[in-house]
Image (cartoon, rainbow, N blue to C red):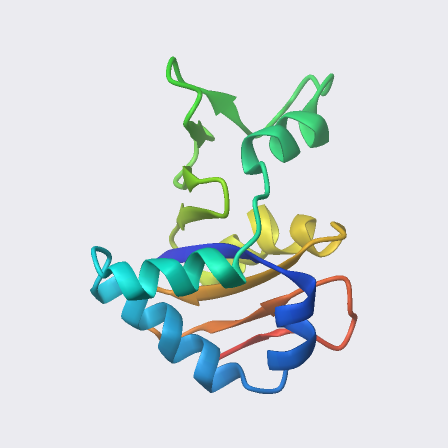
Length: 141
């Protein structure tokens, strides 16, 4: 399974929270046409810079059994298990894992404790939804 996690501007989250299908279709188009200038401009408008790298570093700084390590490029966070988190750019990252349960445990649950809003879409489009500080927002399947 591959999930793309996007950091979304708060005002976009507020206006489009109940338009989940619309947001999902937009991100699917972005995934299928990554070189579209128009889609890229729209993506830049609704996403927000979020340093996933710094967030992971702050979250796991000082822990002895940290589940992540940083490669030489500082781009790939990987646990010795069977998942990878790849930082694509400042507003998104890619999670590769074996199951929705693993994605929930590894990344989705920790992100819920963050003040930032995120939209997650599985590259196949089967699982998608919001993760945000609002307790009513949940990943759909």
